[in-house]
Length: 307
Image (cartoon, rainbow, N blue to C red; front, side):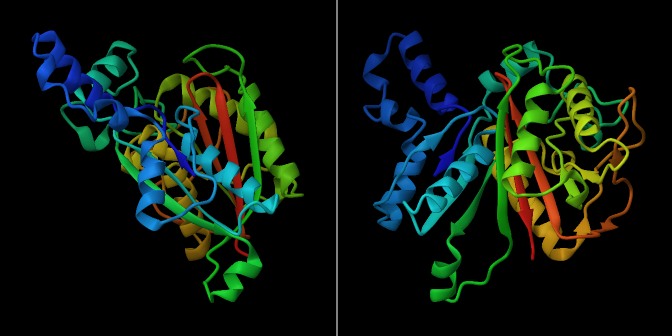
């Protein structure tokens, strides 16, 4: 089960350049298969000889988290005993950078790029484009025990919700995000007070971080858990981000440490968060929430425990 935000833009750009130069004979006969969004999932299945359900989820920057949620549903329905759930994106191209630049979504801190990604900081001005992948092995308890697999964490809840608001601008009050968080909590039979840490989507854009802060305040209010955000360190891996964040959340719970948000110096706006800054903080409890939000108002939230 693979989540990807878009098909291979670099492949499209390369092949269109051949056409633009009136050299159709240079276009690869594999251009279409290479650019099909589901091809990455197909390649993994072929390599492993996995013959169960195999497809791709695409919900923009929530794709990786959505893939994990759908994979979990396959386990709960009894369709599968074990599923590889991952998010992957290879979007670093001149076209991608140009499009995000035209949208004014990227940080303009070119002189000091190490300071550019700063989730929830008052001086944030955009995200830093990242790239990567993460794979989680999800399986039923009985299957894991039978093969002697160590259990790193338990996926307890998955929730999704739509903003139904705008193609690229999140709802300012975080309606879809709130719905997704509540759905994940209900799925896990948890209350907001049970959450020990939040791994926020935290893109470092002015609009996203403000909307996410509003959503988290609506859910948690005065009982705000510690908030971290991985993109301050690794940038925004787009469709892969949700899966990377899920792994990040599991590691934080396992190591009982909430990593600090890079470059965070202070908040703005009315919706304050308990942002972990400067030094790591011990995890008090065993429940972590991983939030992923994407263009089109697509929101996915995962809840993990280590009990």
